[in-house]
Each structure stands twice: as structure tokens, then as C-alpha cells.
Image 1 (cartoon, rainbow, N blue to C red):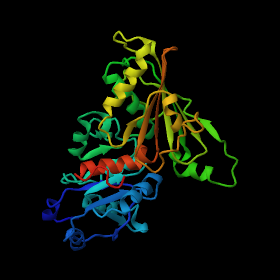
Image 2 (image 1 turned 135 degrees about the horizontal axis):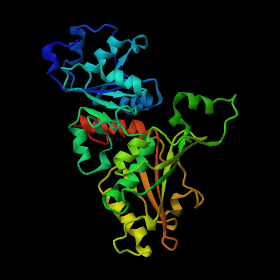
Image 3 (image 1 turned 30 degrees about the vertical axis):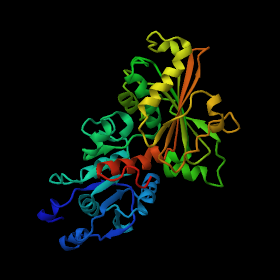
Image 4 (image 1 turned 135 degrees about the vertical axis):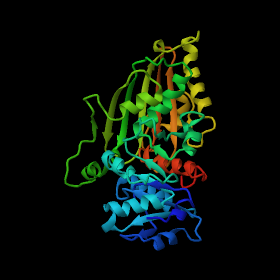
Length: 365
């Protein structure tokens, strides 16, 4: 446990997912804890769940940074409640890379008197909880400020990141009515399924399907998040798919112009209006880029001039938005391309951590 004087000395941020650096002994004394802070101005980060896919990626993004010291528990202590409690309450940042129930338990380890530590949760446990700040800095003009002032940040899901990025600006601009029954078609690399799916696809002993759709119950856990932060009045129909590649994803939202508020625009100008709205919305974004409008303008971005690859942005925190329009038919297809483990998970967690700690937002990304 920290001494009372030490508890008021430095703000804390905890990231639960896995780390490199200082190894906290199984029982931390006040003297050894104090040594963590002596003559060291680096921000201390604890990743709870470091052995998981997201945790490993967070660790990789932080390990080379000179402004971060990663707090690490010994292998024998990673599941020890008191060791984790000590690490959580000693860090400047905690990133939780855990299943929902474990994230809830980890959050409860934060001492009531600790008002300094920032917790970033990568699970779905708190994403629609109004007492947590949604960790999508590009969501609105105020969202980055909200994150910088928050001590509890919920990291967005990978599929919702693409869907919300495409639809929120158009709903805010009253182009897409809130009552529109949208459909979301999306494909992700198998890493999105975690260790079990990765082992399955990377095994030489299994005859793995090259592609598969799922969530046929139409009750996917991302749906409440997608509805809430897009601003829709009803949940979309969501058809996720997984294929035989490791990282990357494309999230697609088809639109009929007849669903939209045209404000007097004809079909001939609706595609341009959709594109310009997205372009203006993300004009100052470092990580989100709106690509040129239409298939012909993106021929260089398409494999063999035809295929939108889902894995082109792997290992980055970038996201590309596309508007493919056919004004003659009165239709548009909106697509978001991102790394499901980058902007869709660990990259977003590091971006949120940087904002919350007052560091360079792009550091490590």
C-alpha cells in the first residue's frame, strides 16, 4: 500500500493488458513502492491482461518509449489479487485487456481514495456506461477534451469504430435520419477472435474454412455501442464475418438516397454531399483519412483496380473512410478500413492513454 503522502504526489493511469519493465514483487512494501517514484519522471503504466492479443500489442507500442515505464508483475503473481491491487494503485495509467467480468473485478481494485489513476478498459463492460468516457477522440469536437479530463475511459470496439466513424457525422448533419434501418456488413481478420481462434487458424492440423459469417442471432454484443454512439434510434442489422487473414477489417454501410434527408439536393449531388460532410468532419484528424470519392478515384488504392483489401493498415492506428457512390442508381456504399488490433483495439488504447496523461497524442503510434 502507498503511504498517504505518496498518494497525493503524482496522477495515476493504469492500463490492464501486459507490460515490460519494472517487476513488482509479490508483496510490495512502502519502501519498495516509494522507490518506484524517486527521481523518475516517466509515466508508469500497468497492463492487466498482458498475455492476451490486445495486451501484447499495447506492450509493443509502449516498450520503446522513453517517457513510459511499464510496470510488470512476475508470472506467478499476475492472478494474485493483492499484487494486482498494488500495481493498479501505483501506476499512472492502467489498461485493462481482460474479459468483461475480469475487467469489472479489476476496476473494483482501485482504492476509493485514489482519484489520480486513469483506467482504460478494452472490454465491452463499460462502453455504454454513462459514468465512463467513450474513448473515441474523433467522435465529436468535445470528445478529446472529455477524455483528457476523465479517469475512466472505455475503449471502443473494432467493428463499432468503423461503423460510428462512417455514420455519426452524417447523423449529426441530419443527412441520415436517426430512424433509418441501417445494415452493417463487416469482415475482420481472425485475430479479432482472440487466442482460441488464432490457434485454430494458425494450426497445421485443422481444415479451416477460408471465410465464415456469424452472429446469426442478431444479438451481437457490439450493437448497443453502435446504436448509442452513432446517434441512431434503432440498432442496425449487423452481419460480421471472419476470414483467413490475421489482422485488418473493412466495415461497410450501404445507403439508398431515398432514406436520406436531401434538403433539396438531387441524386446527382448526394454522393458529393456525403463525401464532403465526412471530409469536413475529419479534416483535422491525424489518424482518420477520408479517401477520394468513388471507385475511379480510388483505383490506385484497390488491389488490381477492383478489390478493397482489409489488411492494408495492419500494425497502424490509421483508419481510411471511403464513399463509393452511384448517383444514377441513387445509392452509396460507405466503407471504413482499419486494423482491428490497431485503431480497433491497442492503438486506440494508447491514443487514449496519451490524451489522458497529457502526452503527445501520436506517441508510439
